[in-house]
Image 1 (cartoon, chains in turn yellow, cyan):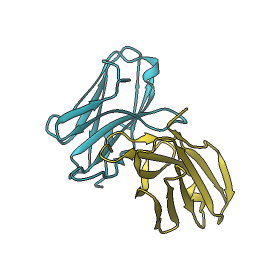
Image 2 (cartoon, rainbow over the protein chains, first blue to last red):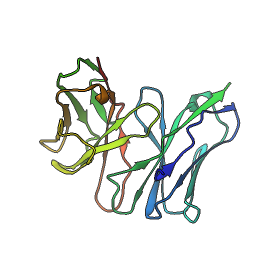
Image 3 (cartoon, each protein chain N blue to C red):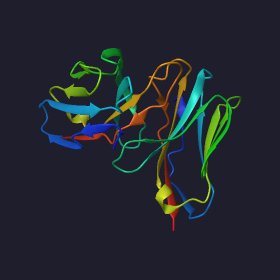
Image 4 (cartoon, rainbow over the protein chains, first blue to last red):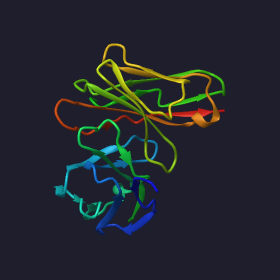
Length: 112
Length: 115
């Protein structure tokens, strides 16, 4: 079993919908949680970076961490066709951020 | 553009040849990382540097792979005697490390195709 599980999708939703992307993990030592967006033939782009449990909001994006359930989420409001990409979660324990543990990514398609 | 820069963007070579990739990190970042990514997977850690010191290498990293960061600025990743299985996207990332964890920022990668 992988340390980080992420549904590969694809997830297809209509423009304007609220999107929910999720990852589950098994290592309770993880304390730093990241969401990256990756367009085809491009590198991962950092979207959200959170520490420990709670919510963080940035524009249309909200990251949520539930350490008790070992579950993280990324919500996208008012989704746009330009949000179509692969979304990767990554995490690391405190004091060891050199080696991120990654999900396999969820492919998101926003239909106009 | 002050992001992470990688060169070349795409490299096509014959099996058995050597290849070298370059990465220029964000200028104030002291940590530099190399990853490999194949289709449908997250990036796989290869190695990282803090300034010019190579502090960690993945146990999965073959001895055909070598990386350098001679002056603590740009880095090179060399693959000797390339094999079909080396075909992948090679990603470079950088971060500023002082106290606590800071996020890694990625370049757009070098896509390696082995004929």
